[in-house]
Structure formats: C-alpha cells, structure tokens
Image (cartoon, rainbow, N blue to C red; front, side, top):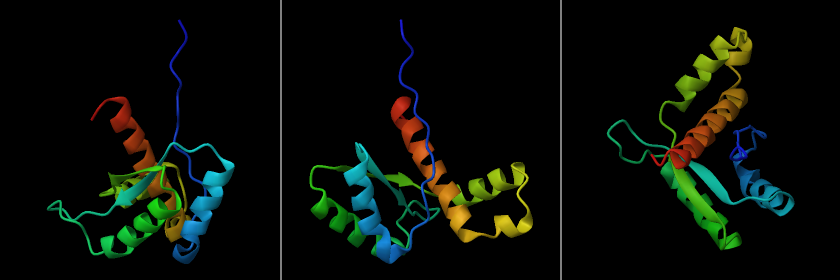
Length: 123
C-alpha cells in the first residue's frame, strides 16, 4: 500500500497589490493550480475587517478572469503573531523580523498550511 500524497505550503514572493492579479494569472498559466486560497481578515468578534473592501474587488476580478478556478477564503487571524513567533524560534535577527514582506510571506504560508490541514482533517 502506498502512502497518500503529502503536500506542504511554501511561500512564493511578496507582490505589490497593484501587481497581484497579473502575478496570480501568470502563475496559474505556468503551474497546475486547483484552488486559490485568499486570506480572510476578520475581527476578534468574527466580523469582516475593513481590509475586505480591498480583498473583495480582487476576488471578483480573479473569478472573472478565471471563471473555472475554485477560490476559497481562509481565516488569517493571528497569522502575523504566528509568523513573528516562527521568526523568533528560527533565530532571525530583529532587523529581519521587522521586514514586513517576510512577515507577510510567512503569514501566507501559515494561512495556506492551515487551509490544507483543515481540508485534510475535515475541519
């Protein structure tokens, strides 16, 4: 009996917001992608944060350009805290921990890993 396929989340790059749609479209054109996972910014009371006013138009544009692509949201609460903890645990110096692009990339990996684990375990 063979082992089931094992997947791991990995960061790609931090992309300026105005380049994000073209970056995602280019990536999907080059790589096999089943689903695009978008961080869902929520408040502690589980309501959407102000950031949704930026994210919803992006997701609408993405769905328009890729009508057959599955796009799902994943809760992104606490991911920055977890990213900073991972950076501390990894021994990164203070200057590296202040790099917002690196924090964002690690946070994105945490979001994707959490999403994949929720699907694996039916959470």
